[in-house]
Amino acid sequence: MLKQNSLYLGDCIDLFEKIEDHSIDLIFLDPPYNLQLNKVLTRPNHSVVNGVNQDWDKFDNYASYDKFTFSYLIECKRVLKPDGGLWIIGSYHNIFRIGKILQDLNFWILNDVIWAKSNPLPNFRATRLTNAHETLIWCSKKPKSKYQFNYHTLKVANEDKQERSIWNFPICSGKERIKNKTNQTAHPTQKPLALMKKIILQSSIQGDLILEPFAGTASFCAEGKYLGRNYIGFEKDKDYFNLAEKRLKKIKSLKSNLLEVNEKDKPIQKIPFASLIDNGHLKPGTILYNNNKNYKATVLPDGSITYKNDRGSIHKIAAKVNKTSSFNGWDYWHYEDKKKNLISIDMIRKKMRG
Ligand SMILES: C[S@@+](CC[C@H](N)C(=O)[O-])C[C@H]1O[C@@H](n2cnc3c(N)ncnc32)[C@H](O)[C@@H]1O
Image 1: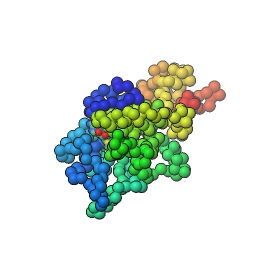
Image 2: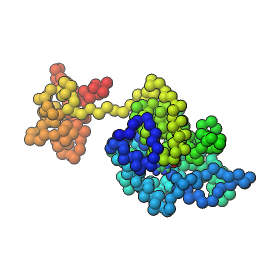
Image 3: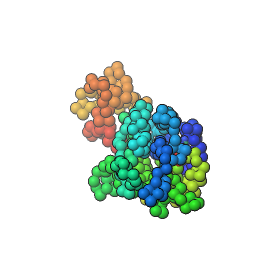
Image 4: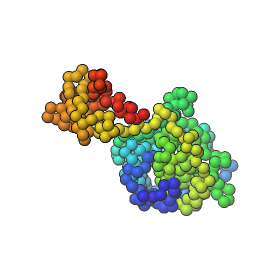
């Protein structure tokens, strides 16, 4: 496994191989756009626009771009934890192709988000609309994944209104924009920290491990470090890598007490039924009842329960007596306390969560 809180120089496809299965909490991808810019773009005063015309953005055709996209997304699927989250950003040049491949790989799209740029580059030739946004896609691994969503955190930040899928931020500029030795913009697509912050605060908690496979100046790792997340980043260009390393070294993380997640967004601790027995809350042999005592089941030491000739989980047996395919056993079964009151087993689980 790669060391946490490190940036690696190299091709992400090779570096992915060094990451264990199901080990990453949150992935942010800002891949090549495949802009296909062949000509130099100039302003009306003939100055050159710092567009994306570097080799890393060049692909022979759509098929080779799609192949590349598939090769890193399948790795993302492998390394992401079952309940992890993935965000990917792009423009009209690439985001539709990426969306299709995400769905082909059975990622579950949760939202697409518009990053509306308050200060976009004008359309200098006046031949099209000014391109004033990029699109982000947010997905989980599967439809039933219990991905982290800090709903209340976002709502409070939005003055108690439910957060929407259009986010307004300026493009990265001023002091935040990293310059190279000749005082030119060092990276053409450096993303604003405010955008990174929103994604991190929405989709992770302190101590999570986040991954940025196309780091560039490592904006996601940088904000992640500041917000007390552990990070791994990949970048194949040596100059960008060096800049990013320097940037990350300078960042100090906020103190842990400032990074507590909103109480209502805290991930719910998983408590298997067997742990109620292991922790002495229920004894093997205890009788469980439904709320009007029509059905009785018996608790076994391994956390299964029996009803007549059937043996299974609290859910399976609840489904069986209700003649249905699935049932939430936590809501169905009760035990009798010393005063003969029926108490839901879910009450014990709630107490254990504290
Ligand atoms: C769109 S930029 C990311 C910019 C970054 N979000 C930032 O804020 O600076 C894409 C980056 O991916 C890098 N890259 C392209 N192909 C790569 C690959 N196969 N492995 C690792 N990095 C790659 C490029 O060098 C470029 O810096």
